[in-house]
Length: 212
Image 1 (cartoon, rainbow, N blue to C red):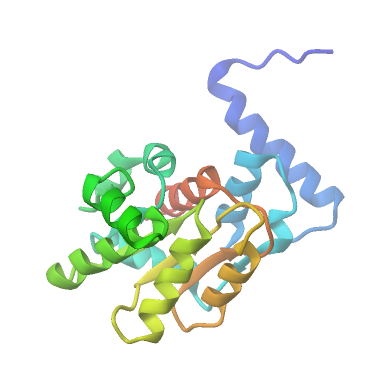
Image 2: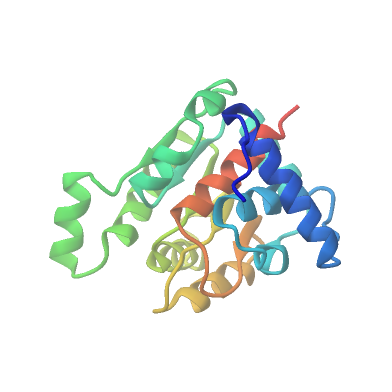
């Protein structure tokens, strides 16, 4: 039977159902990571995130400290940019940026024969290096974005403040995530093939909604 739930109660009801299913599966979440994992599950209806989301040491506290200090968010898709709560982020002085639609990025990527995601990360890193502005990278689509961030880090050209690495897909997706988990860069990464721009946005929003 269809259950009647008033619109304002749908999200609350959804999280109650998530809690019930977590209990039935015998899953107990780390309190600090709990809001992030629950929102990823809420966004995807996929309980695998309770097992596959990987957090570096003190990741949630570090990410929220960056946000409270006015950090920006750089995404690899306009979909993630759209999904992040920009009004909430602006309360702390941050903004969301995505370079993927920039004409200069597209032209350079075509000329070099590489992905726009790679070039967009390079452009973002260049801008950040000039301003010194703290930034969280939220990558939900392109493994090449993560590979480029790791390459710049290895070469000593740029060190991200924080990486949310949850691209979805098959080619180089698993490997790119592992590259980030090998570093000392604070991160939240979803191990395996699953992820997506919606998950990247959900993780950012979970961090925002849990701010004090």
